[in-house]
Image (cartoon, rainbow, N blue to C red):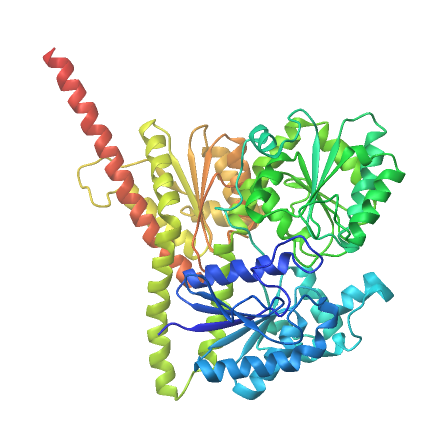
Length: 624
């Protein structure tokens, strides 16, 4: 029987148009996470407030995901700052729905603090465990907005109570985790960092000129893009002030602003839109700013791709979804050094981080990037690699599922004997599940890795393999298969060297110099242009693995990385990443061994086919 998960997102429905005051990153997060969790075999119901009387109670959105509209207050738009008074009705209606439909939820995932309040009451009444993603913290908001913060004053006390009662808290970045601990006394052991993500089938590189033609933008202009909700804390005024400073250098530049309450920016009466237009006019740059209004999500990739630089400099930002989407489209990001942005943007590699509300610093970085096309292109390539290695919704959903399972099964254990049998069953089930997910995710990169290795070996190049601990054992095992034989007893040995094999080198170098460069030093010695480096790491965070890849780059070698847990730092540098969709070191190592066997077989097949073709050609030439 499939586990059913209840998402609560009281004000942010996946069905809402994005870019308005109360519709943005949370809507995307809830919808994408639900879809990808459903693709892994769960059934998900998203409970959200009915803000339009025309909405049916139940909407079958995508396979495995339903959206349940709850009547709580008037059936029209209400600012989220005024929704707390309707949460008792929301809770009562949700309890009634569960009873009427006889739905058995294994877990509730609350999104935002008011949804967390509902989840607390559900846990009390129905004994359903819950996790929460706050998406924004009242204490942090109050620091930055002061008296302009219109949320009820009891918000912070409610958030503190939720933090105590939640079975697990999802922090979207390290800063989020730090704020939860410092401001809410949250238990560090009760916090899991799971970032936001993007969908590679939705956001991907598109030819810049083509994107501009589709959007009727000039093909020869320098374009910077601001995209998101039209509210003061997003810092769009900071971008306009930076534009003014860049224009003073006689650098041609256009700012395109996507977002607002309507599709027509000329009729949009959003106070922030009007304020920004006046600001641009007062500074003499209104002609250099193009407000395009709210846009459908399927159009956004063209705006990202059309831009030379994506700009996002909010006062604070727990999310950072738009920077991920921009980088996925190959657009470098200049972002504020806050919250989720400083977690997603690699400063100096995929863009730059600048202080918030500092137009001078922002203008300097814009000018630097616009003036250096090589740097722009390098950052473009780095951005695409980084987000695809670390931040796809598939990877994010796997992290969430791992956390869900711990909570669900932790609440289901019975006797000691049952526990032991359950642990055995779970071990097999989780291994089987990981293998199936790896099959779907890794087929293409594994085939690519085998081809790269085969081509190199056929060209008389060699393969160097490295790893630590269990991965070191894996490198030795793989080397023995390649030096000896895997399935073919007729082929010659292949030049494959494990950098973890020579204990005298490892211990001597580590003792005298340090373990961080124990592999990179060997690569400096053995590596040649055209060789392959195969790195193995369950986390991708080992310094000696990252250093090995960096040195291999300098030697003009091709780097393949067998990784897990999202890939870590190693995924940023490798040419080809094979990242096991799991956070468990045991599951990752099991898959790694299977992949090494698969690659061994593929390489043998490739080289055998080449040999047969060569023999056939030679015989044909002899006959002629």
